[in-house]
Each structure stands twice: as structure tokens, then as C-alpha cells.
Length: 188
Image (cartoon, rainbow, N blue to C red; front, side, top):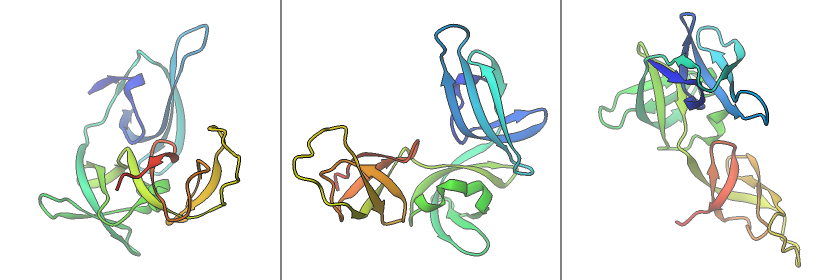
């Protein structure tokens, strides 16, 4: 199925020259002068080679036919990452290469979208936001009221993010999975 290059997002699977590639990053670039382009960094699924491609935003790209389904994360062991399909209770094992940089963000029961091609999971897409608790952060400095000032914090999964000064240890926060940035305090 042909789609516009500008519509491709992280996790999409593209068919180029008979080989499947998963999109790692997608950036639409609009220069002041000239044609807008889409810069894609991709990983070839067969052997893990990373490539970078640039297309005009209006160019058509062949999107591979994959089965995108919702799976819940169960656990990780020596085999890989285990997921379960909630309707059928079918379980699949996803390799460490497929999970990649998303591994620290997987929590028990987290719903993700797995792209399966010919029975093999080839790409994983996290939900738009995930919620974590702040394990440690610096105390706020009195008088530091500038809204643009942020301080470092460490989440319970060990990841480091920047949060506003009023956030303290023990606060649950919502993280955007697009760029791993703080979004807001959790409402729960």
C-alpha cells in the first residue's frame, strides 16, 4: 500500500526494494526555501542495519502489509520479552532488538501495538503516554518561579528526565513516549 512519506511515524514498516525496514525516527523538514522533505532513520528487519533516507513529503512510499494488534506486556527472561494478546490469550516472544530503546518503559500489563509480519513480531509501538513515579529529584529552590526552569529527576525505572521545580519524589508523572519528556502530573 502506497502512502505519503510525510505520514510515516516511528514504528511504521516500509518495504524498499523487497526488504522490510522499521522506522526509528521520522522528521518532516520545511526549509524556508525549497521543497519540504521527510527524513527517516530506519532499521532493516532482516539484519539490523540502520539506514537513513530522505524523501519529498509528497512522494509515495510502499508501506509493508503487517498485522498490527494490541498486546499486553507480561515479563522478560532469557528468551526475550513476552507479550499476550488480550482477546485470544496467544503469547509471543519479542526479541531484544525489536524492543530496543523501549525496554525500560515496559511495565506489567502495559498495552503496546506489535506489528507482526508472517508470524514474527518485527516492530513495537508504545502508547502515546506512560505513567511513572519519581524516585528521586533535587529539592526545589525557593524563589525559583520561572516557568521554563526544569530540574533533573530519576524515575522508578531508572530513567532520567527533566521535570518542573514543584515536582517532588513520590509524585506520579505522565511521560510522552515520542521524546521521553515530562507532560503533566498523573491524575490518579
